[in-house]
Length: 410
Ligand SMILES: NC(=O)CC[C@H](N)C(=O)O
Image (tube, rainbow, N blue to C red; front, side):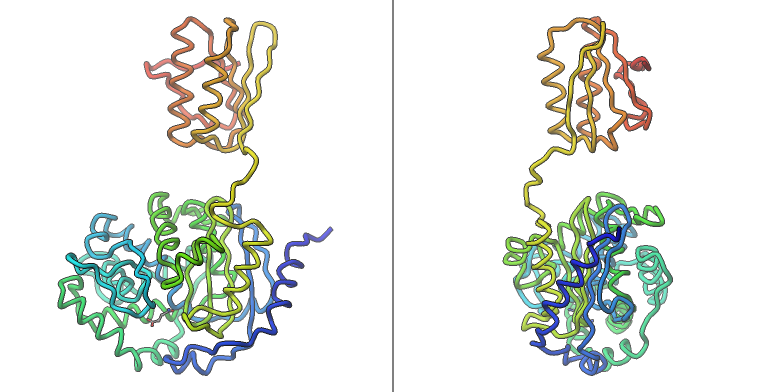
């Protein structure tokens, strides 16, 4: 049997291919002259399987899709507090190249607009880093995220730099307001190189799947971004990734996303998938026309909306009586709700034999779920009951009951 997922993706491309509206980005000569025909779609699961269709081998410059990933690098390098001093997290409601500064602080409103992304680039590595070190930092990080060695398209870089007056002027304004400490030309040059890194849709869906997977690259298993930073980046994508259309996008499509002027579009659904599309003709907001429509189709057809209820618990709780033991089963990824349900069952039980908790099918506990379960076991033991824990996968590693004692192994 061949998996039908790529067939579905082909079908999406086929129905949208006839849409030739919009035009390639006109303000960067190299992009203006790009072949407008390619169209590709790629979905990578948080477990590392990629399904793709169309012109998946066609490389294109990453452009603004670099912004969320460079923002992640800046947070890793300098800490979130330092980054928040220079760049806000509010939607700008304006186009990507507006100088949207916050009243009072003069911070760019968010890292997805150019002003914020230029500031983020300047924060990479460390205070006195060279321009080269910053470019190398994003190139190395994007390569780890994609799982292969990426390169800069020097032609796109030179072409954009010639027409980058708008970005230069924004960088000078940022310097004027004390947001940018470094040489404006050097920072814009580095930022433009960052935007000129060549990727394919498969690279992008892998990069997004890494965010979806909490910062762990799902194929190489390398931990590239810590969980809090991944959460920060996905939140900002939801708030500001689609610029002036952010609210419409989040309500209708519900996939935190980021677009680029070369025609790429990347989206992420936490714990589920990274998605990427590519087609160079842009709509009036500067987003790829066909890529946007492909995302709209996926969201509808595949129930891929951030706020779509999943109608089904991943973490079923069951109870069984066996001799003098009452056995409780948990499975999946246990979060607050499943833990609360287990605790209710434990507290409602009027059985007074041993408690046996079987978590052999649990993949993970959130911190709160772990604390809740251990506290419940501690209370039961204090009531004089024997506690057994069946945890062959060690999902509740080091289950100290708060006083240096542990449950018994069955
Ligand atoms: N939206 C975009 O992709 C813009 C990126 C482009 N390099 C710029 O700075 O103008």
